Length: 232
Image 1 (spheres, helix red, strand yellow):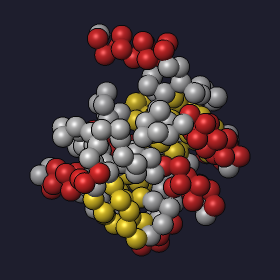
Image 2 (cartoon, helix red, strand yellow):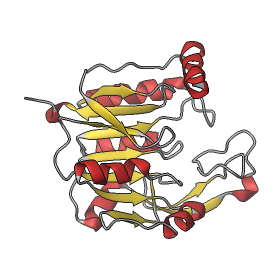
Image 3 (cartoon, rainbow, N blue to C red):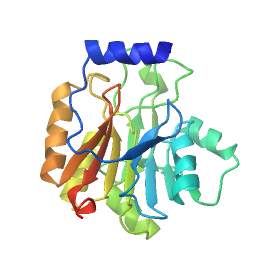
Image 4 (cartoon, rainbow, N blue to C red):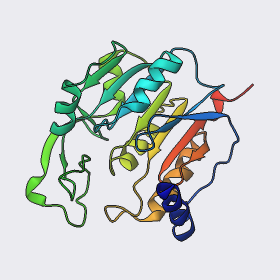
């Protein structure tokens, strides 16, 4: 109840930048913390899902495997996430890769969270994070990962990558890669990222054929579907 009241207060004080523009049935899979939407009628059987930003919550991934028969390729290069995944008992349909997603192949700097209990390293330092705790970790472009795994373009691309999403989406558009569903956490109002950056990114995605079907109560998690996937 308290969490719900907080969500309502956030929507009033900081309303989401966008609203869904297509009304499509979907279910939010996973925990309140780690949940993401999947379209119910427009997700194929046995979908291929790329899930970037594992952290310590794979509830979405496991439920997608159970309910949709998904194959999950999950990615996270940060040491804490890698250690956590190593301790889990995972189904064969969950395949983990200790690399990050970026707009280049090579290495990237990841800044530590402000609080030790937090998991997510970010593309830019948070206000109180210690720059001395930054790490460097391997990253690859989406096109490179697809080529190396030989899977073809995923049906669903989920990314919670703490500020890297803007450059990655620009690279995705430039490479003409079009996953049917994009599930993205945008980090406006965090890491000094302005609202306009997300507004501009959504316009680019619309021009590339995507339509919003979901915006979370927090206004940060978005679900987009490519128009070719919803043509009757």
